[in-house]
Each structure stands twice: as C-alpha cells, then as structure tokens.
Length: 423
Image (tube, rainbow, N blue to C red):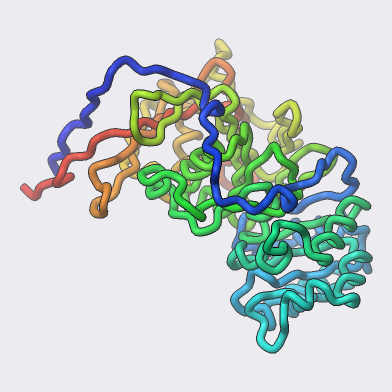
C-alpha cells in the first residue's frame, strides 16, 4: 500500500489556552436546568459507562451499599429506554436480587398508555422519589431523560426536584450509558462519533444541557474506551468550557462521593485535563496540544479537586512504572505507529506503550476512507512527560495499568486522495 505523506503548510503557530475560546450561543437548555452547587450535597453518584451486566456484582452491590444497605428503597427511572415497560421492571428485579427494595416509576416518553409529563407531576410518583435512598437511570437516549424531567422553559419538573431533594439529603443517584451522560451540566445528544466531531466540529444540537448532578466543573462521557470517544470528549470540553472530564468504559462505574472518584467494575475510566492545553489559531480544524490523560483502573481513586491519584491496594504492592527513575526497565521497545487511534481500546493500548517503553511516544492517525471531508485526518500523538508515571499488575490474570498524566497532541493533517493504490 502506498500512502502519500502528510502535508503541513501553515504559518508559525499562535498558541492560546484551550479554554479561552468557549463558543457562546449553543443550544443548551436554560440555566435553570443546570446543576446546583454540590458543595453541600450529602449523596453520592454511581456513573456507569454502559453495557452494565446484571452479574457485575461490585457495581450493583455498591449502589445498594451507598443507598443504606439491604432493604434500602431504590427507584428505577426508565425514561431513556426504548422499551421502558420491560426494562424498568427487569432492572428493578435485578436490584432486588442484590438486596434492595426496588420499584420503578412510569416516567418515560416511550411508555405505552402513560403520559410521562403527567407522571412527572403525579403525587405518588413524587413521593416515591422523595423517599428513595437510591435513584437509577436506565440507558437508551439521554434526550428522553431531559424531555421527561425538564420543562420546556428549562425549569425542573416536580419529579426532578424530588430526585435532587433525595440527592441533597444523602441518596445515591446513578445511571448507565444515557443515565451516565445526564450527570454533567452538558451532555452529548445528537452527536457524531469522534472523527466526525473533529472534522465538522460541535454541530447544532450535538451538545445539550444535562441534569448537572456532578456540578459545573466536570464533563462526562460513556462507552469511552470501547468506542474511542476521547477525541470527541476533548472537543466538547473545549467548546463548553470544561477544564476536566471523565470518560467511563463499559461494564464499569465511577463512584463520586466526598469530592472524589472511585472506579468499580471490570475496566477503567479516563480523566481528561485541558486546563493547560493549547490551541493553534493558524489551523482551521480542531487541534489541541498538551492535554493530559489519566487512566484509572478498577480500585483506583482520584481527588476531584487536586487530581491526586490513589492506586488500588494490590497494585500499590506490585510494580510502579516511573520512567524518570534511574532503574526504569521498559517492557516495550519502540512502539509501532497506529493506523486508527480511535479504534476500540486503542487509546489505552497507546497509553500503556507510551508509559512503559524506551521511547515514550506512540503516534497514530484518525481518518476516513470516504465521506465529505475524507481529506481531513488527524495525527494523534500520545507521549509521556516528566510528570508521567503509573503502576502495573498482573494479579487479575493479565497486565493492567494505572497511568497518570499521559500527554496528548491532536493535529489536523491532509490525507491523500486516494489514500492508497493497489500495486
């Protein structure tokens, strides 16, 4: 395969901080729907990245533990689901199997025979939500959740006020997939995947207001490593003025309590930091230099205020990976270039090899073989800095890594047309 070289024709870059270019006028719901101050909230959040299996006992048991233990009243809100009449009772039964006293409420736009707007104002429904010690949002389409719980003028329905009331007084609020997306003040709605978002930017209606349970500081995305969504999350963070974001992988959850994140489940989460990242004004397409990524594995924690990482107990006793240490012995030699940096779990693999190699750099591309902007691709460089370190452990049967402060640059490049030719 013959691939033409990447072209780079631009003047000397004019770098500016990535947070100075927040675009106003986005179609977000009115400010009344944004998150309250969470400084005095006594509850916790369980934010699952999607495809949460019913046999993922660590996550389900943690929900019930945070709700108060066996017998705690937990209410399922099936608003996002395409089959709320089936999925609501099914998830309630799952919660019961782990010890909760679970029920579900008929707040769902696609629930046959029920007016979801009236259900969000029904006194019996409001009473269940106010007295709940746990509220769980199903996956599906996150816009159905906001349609069901937020009035057209952006104010909260009585049902949403009841959920906030429970959360303020100590209830755990959580959700998977769509139920995770609504946790931050802004959420993806009708959004493209990562490459399209980078090529076309954040389009109208792609980002809308979430329910804000996580406060105003953090952005949330789901199915994160499985669908290569880190690049689109960085786009949204830049557009919406977030310094920090967290992307949760599938069959995994982050627990947010006492201003700290803790990872529970089978995979991990990626914390994104663009507080010190830069944008090159000379480039017309999305670009970012020196953003930082931290991969938290199951059992790891992070202080949301200081971003300090506490590694899991078993990993702390295993192997620390510090490339600045004189005795550092890398497991990988020079990593190969990556053809598709947005492929499933490719980001994690690149971060591991950049951390634990002699060169400390993995470079890859993101591009399309067809489409309106097939000539616009992106070079994605994952590399370590002096502040990059981590841990690895094989106690689970294969090597898993915690990686702190991996750096990333995203640069638009011109792809050849055709990209390749047959010999």
